[in-house]
Image (cartoon, rainbow, N blue to C red; front, side, top):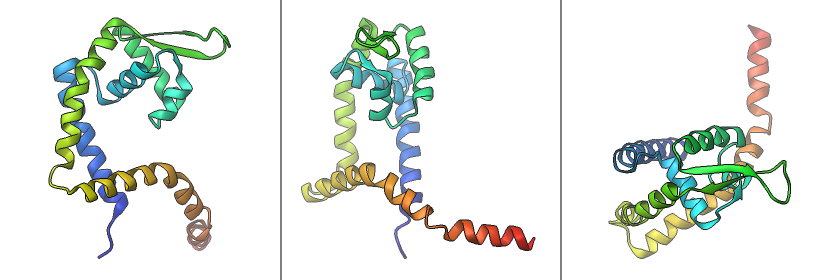
Length: 161
């Protein structure tokens, strides 16, 4: 039986993020996505929302709402770029910086625990696969769906119904 990558990824993503959200909210009062924003800003404070959205694979509008909630919590501030007033940049507040620092060690341990039981070679393969997937998936999926096979068969069903 072929590996069902979509299904396996969906289950893994859901399981990891549900557990991370629950644990992070209980320990630090933030979601996994909010922690991702804080980690990003710890390295690139003052980054434009568009850069954060790209790094976290989020849409700008979804991230804008998240940033608004984080600002209300006192984790970040947002303001116009000094170079271009149309660009919104996000800055860590002291509380956001504290939470990011507090989350580093547990996140490293979680990463190590998720990979426990795999050899060094297997770990490198997993990392290579995930990085390749993040890079190639959009074009592979777009190219496959753009072939028209599915839309033609759906059109044929619609016209016979």
